[in-house]
Length: 237
Image (cartoon, rainbow, N blue to C red; front, side, top):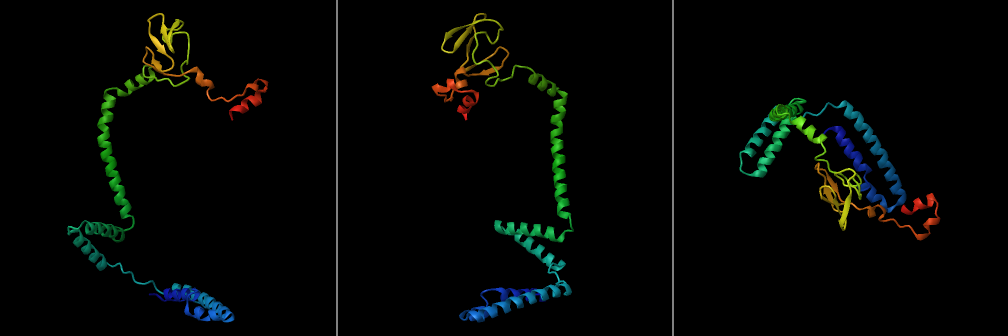
């Protein structure tokens, strides 16, 4: 132990409310006050002395020496040679510590960077044939053509009419009601259900909907006919 560490330990003991001097002085309030103030002053002096001594004392000799590193490496090898999984795990931890302590600064980062670089090279080698085949077979042009076409488009609600008297596939052609939410085109006799949805001739899918849902949830009382615009908008808040 260094001298500065010993002085700091003494100062910590003096500042502790459980040291023997303060415990013995608790029977008398005046005595306790004098003892407590003296302990605090003494601790401050010891701390100051510890700072000064720490600057003057030479650094303590490190326990990490080539011999200790070799002994730790031998211990890790012995643990790794056993059949105990827990001991093998401890050996791996020792190897990692030895690599961190014994290696020069930046060696661990360089090793990890090299491993990441190797993985990146392998990833490129596996991905390159895929990109080459994609370019050779003109897959990009096919994907763009499919995306630009309307055959795979799927309409969202309100993007298509919720109800109409004209055929969705034939502009201007009339449709006739043949059942509940069922309508039939006069040209090709195709039926359309605006409630459950339908599919157009170009492959686009129109989801179902109902015009009644546009006003669902509105709680407007009968006297709303006398409201102004600002009052009417306040009912939906």
